Amino acid sequence: MTATATVPPPVRPAPRGGRGRPARSPHRALLGLAGVATFLCLLELLPRTGLVNSRFLPPFSDMAEALGERAGTGEFWRALGDTLTTWSIGLGIALAAGVVIGMLIGSVRVLRETTASVIEFLRPIPSVALIPLAVLMYGTGREATLLLVIYAAFWQILLQVLAGVQDVDPVARDTARSYRFRFLTEVTRLVWPTTLPYAVVGFRLAASVALILTVTGELIIGTPGLGRLIAVAQTSGAVASMYALVIVTGLLGVAVNLLARLVERRVLRWHPSVRQESAS
Image (spheres, rainbow, N blue to C red):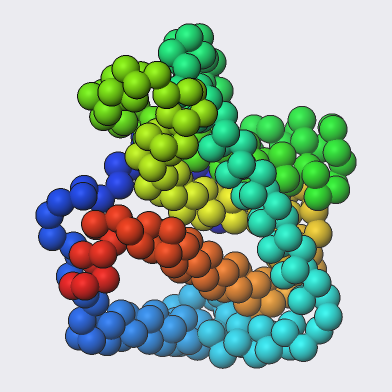
């Protein structure tokens, strides 16, 4: 897993009109399973035929055996729990901070103009560049990795929220002001419903980024978790065990993405694009 150096531009939610995405057909699902099966067969055959040195890439059966051995130890489950704990805490803090700060900056023109240059300066800084600072401040404790996770995930959410606030209908905003809505009322009744789809997209993007930085911090800093187990397996020459743990982090990434999409559909079940996708 590697951390990206820049934050992608805001992702616009699906339009309220138009047709939803077609349902996933059984044929496509079978093709996906066939692709996975082919990949696993290659992992098994390449080392056994000598095309790849088994010291660097052991057969998949050895990885599966090592994974089974790891899964039978308490150390593995503690490491998995540590990774999930760091990920969830970091993502939660980033989500709360990104939504609140984004709503505040986006709703106040003076703040938006005064912070624009600061945001453009800070957001391209890669989180891994903060590793020396994190270690200096917190050593190898969980807080060091949390700093990386929060920093990376925060920008994903903040930029989406800012884009959502700017997408509020100007006519609706002027109407609310003509009726002299209070600031809090305008935010909760007008700005937030428009911004919510953007915020949920930001959450989905931040969930994956947070997991990447969690494992990266554990791998480089030595914070307890799956990343540290990977580093220990690599330094001790347990190659099959190392690959097995890498597979676990990949499966964890898939689970995080599925969970984020489930949250997106549940939170935005009222949104026309989600209803059309569910009905298609």
